[in-house]
Image (cartoon, rainbow, N blue to C red; front, side, top):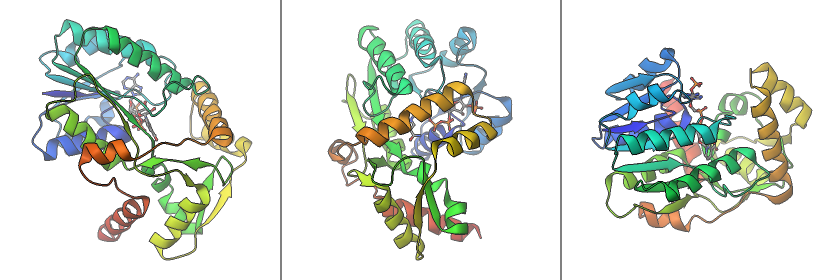
Length: 289
Ligand SMILES: NC(=O)c1ccc[n+]([C@@H]2O[C@H](COP(=O)([O-])OP(=O)(O)OC[C@H]3O[C@@H](n4cnc5c(N)ncnc54)[C@H](OP(=O)(O)O)[C@@H]3O)[C@@H](O)[C@H]2O)c1
């Protein structure tokens, strides 16, 4: 049995689907009771719900588990403490393998959610557990989340300059990498960057969207104050807004780049391109209609 945390979130659902499709048995850790059905629908056979900050619930979640796939909450101020709790509970439960869902370049102090992941990685090195660390780039699904607007007004919006270059990865490839390290031998002690594309400017992203949708998609920089207001309206807390603003600032000044070589090797095939991810999304939407 494999425990997946952050199970009802964007990453968790891709990871569970991939593992279940290949026959793994999954216990899902969900935050709110309302999302239990969501993970059961995709094949989790057991569900624990509660707060990852609560040691007692985490102890229950790791009981009898072979491996943990720990997906930390997105921009959570207590990410390090949550990592500590997960590691300590996993030690007590004597699990065989702890896989940590980190991020590319956790060493960047200017991005607090990266720096927090670096501190959790550091604990893994000395805790005595058999571990693997996966470091994904920015997801293509962050872009595809704008699908309805892209179809509606044909404009792709980003809160950083259009020339900003980011390397991207398809969450489906991330999930496949997660399944491989959890089910194959040879990945204990490894740290793998999961990067699917060469760095792409936002103009290149918009071009890929135009090609995939068969219509012109323009690209526009959203002023940061407008983005912040939208985030507040959507219910994002102060820590999350400040952290994401720092991330956009970092992107603006330094880009966020890497190489797809490691993911190519791990998957045994070239990673999914942005064009392929757009086409998959387009085909799925057509089938839904
Ligand atoms: N987005 C990217 O491009 C990217 C790239 C690399 C790495 N990552 C990392 O991947 C991780 C997951 O990101 P995501 O986009 O999948 O986030 P997400 O969709 O927000 O999922 C995170 C999940 O964690 C749950 N959660 C939040 N607080 C919790 C708590 N205290 N106890 C238990 N569960 C809690 C959330 O549940 P509720 O919603 O019910 O609170 C949610 O289901 C993040 O750490 C992020 O930094 C993301």
